[in-house]
Length: 159
Image (cartoon, rainbow, N blue to C red; front, side, top):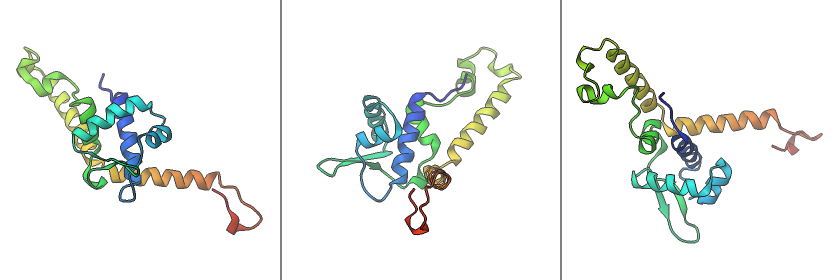
């Protein structure tokens, strides 16, 4: 079964969190872990891989922390997931052909697997971190509006 595991899921959540703060300031590992409910030690490992891939930058010192290494509009969901999960393959024969299966050259289903792989790849490549951050912000606004507490005076609305 093709599945994006916890590494890909947690890394994506952490990256969306950083994208929402892009251009403002660095964020501590603890803040990311707490906000996204990711075990800190696990997040350390993920951040190290994302740094190695050039997706996250780190700053040392008192006001240090993590930020995206490039604009969120330049980072696709595929970029994040492939760093942590490796290439997403529906079937091994899509990438490795004859080396994966002796029937690869005469297989009627291989075309379907190849097409399905392309659809997944195209979708993950087309979704940017900026789009995900914008959607996360929109969801938060909708949730805040849904659960807003109003006083007698609208100017004193609490979110």
